[in-house]
Length: 625
Image 1 (tube, helix red, strand yellow):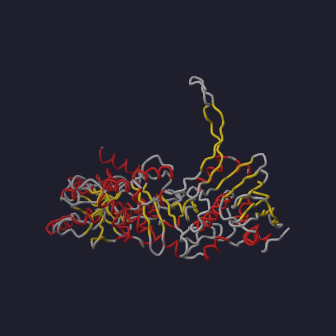
Image 2 (cartoon, rainbow, N blue to C red; image 1 turned 90 degrees about the horizontal axis):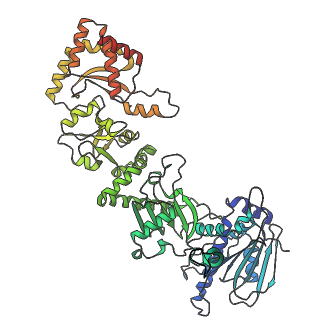
Image 3 (tube, rainbow, N blue to C red; image 1 turned 120 degrees about the vertical axis):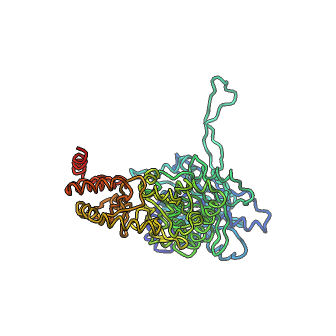
């Protein structure tokens, strides 16, 4: 019995129990090692035509003996190789091969750290390795039961290559190791982790087939085992771009991401630069049910030379493009020793930056050349882009502002900010917007009516984040954002302003009385010319708008202290003004009733609830009777 050449008990225990978080990873590691071994022999075959080029990896399941066998016809190992590579934990033969052949081969070898093999001890209590190196006449057997050490002895083996025999552990209450002897389990793991290994991974699969000669009316079936290839070998993104059609992309998306609907767009790109990678990414046609919840996990599938490293690599996508689904495959990645997570290094950042630029470029093309599909995308994922503008105190606003769309009162469809500014009226110095819970409710706001009559275009902000986005942007191409519900919003001419000032002075005593009746419910009561049909409206002064107040107070644990400074505006041309004035002249106490009714009406029109229902009902009753 030989001892491992490192602190075997401590390091092997660490590898089995700490480095790998998922026991099923062992199959990926052993298959990747087999692929590397074939890669090495394939490299040699370039100068040795006698080598059989029918490379493959075979998996055999022995349920009765509780053994799982993985065999390749790669380069194999000598006794010295076994001693060096398997007797010393963290000694990588693949890494050494890559160093020795730098510049001579473009083979995408996977193994780098020499620890993946030992992940098999997570599921096996004994491992046997039968191997014969290319060009050698002798074969050897390496055997170990874990931390106690290993043995190496001569054995018989006809062909070069390596066969690994795992004797699986007995099942426990927590772990059913016998599942790794089931055809469906092994097949699904190969599909998940090693589907794009470039060599066929074969295994006997049992299928139900109709017996030959059985009658059509009473067909008979039998179980038949046939050797099948479990992996597809050539990933779509490795094929020449000219060979990949839109239909190929759609089928790949639906199969890979289990979506029955075609994506809005699929993009296939080979990126070269400071870091090289292949990518396929897609814009889904609908958002996942949990997309806007805290439980949703964004990220693309990450491959290293065709071996899946991460199911969802969050580091490669910014949150505002979290709706993108796809894959990235690169040989330039620096991985940690378990190949389960990325090191936070320049390659990762370079890929993330490059991928973001590519996504932005494709979205821009969609907006310019495929408006219908861009609007479909924005309907599903526009909120994500809006949050991207607002997040981080607007650090990404310049990247994203041209992707934003809002509903236009004039065009009755979504428009970009650039399109709005381009068609602004002469002399208009601001981007006008209005907020509400829906387009219908916004369209019925009292402040909207007259502005529309004058031909001004108004953007409808129906999402809670919209006004926050406007505040973060502050302006677009020098045009500030202005809400029609702000106190200083006015479309009056100079003559109209003078006329309003005169009328306000005439009704100063009445306006003061109404303000006193309402107390601190409003900051001010004033006359306005911005209304057409409605008698009153509420506007806001200060940094917090009425719509922002709603958003703040709808949040969990809201204490209701976030309040807009409300201003009650009464139409200077509506007959209600004369009615209230007449009532005030007859009975100054009655104005309190009118003040209550006008205030609560304005709240309802603004989408707020009645503040004091009994008081409102009493006031209405007293006025009517």
